[in-house]
Length: 220
Image (cartoon, rainbow, N blue to C red; front, side, top):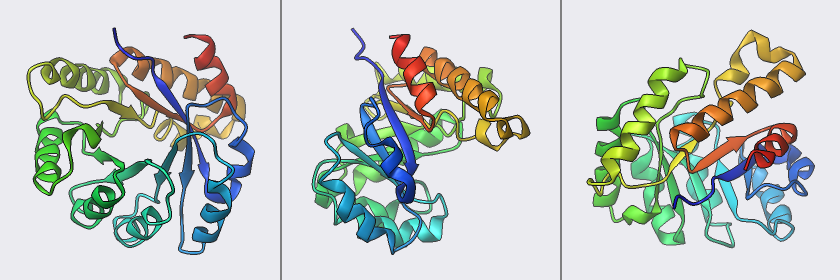
């Protein structure tokens, strides 16, 4: 039987106080600059849940900042994310800290497998890899994104380089739409996106709105 989906509630580390008491499975912290180190040090002892640490998505910043912040972690955490441009800089720190690493590739099963091979060749155990196919649920056109996630799940039954959990940053793309400027509609889009990627087989779903988290928990 498939394990229950784990919900990650994520916020910029500067405003993470607002999510510390929410009923998520994992607390997600987004770092933006080196000065955020002091905030991370203050927050870690207050967070009782597992942690996911994510950087800005800017390759240059990710390569510089993520290894520094990984050294501060006091528990096994999820590090998000590495891609084809950053993995050589990030993987060594992830291995040293015994963390899990999200590997992001465009919506392509072959690219996902290639990156899993490359990172495992550097010494990252396969059971420490989480696949991110880089879809936002509704953002790119869900039918295509759904099919890729579903195909990875099926191929993973016979291919060790695809037999990893899937993570979806469910609202990352929907949040960029003009409709998401309306808070109520933005929450609805996040819920819709999360429900879709859950159906497609996501093992971890990243949310940003407590209301969306509450709704998804009620659907369990």
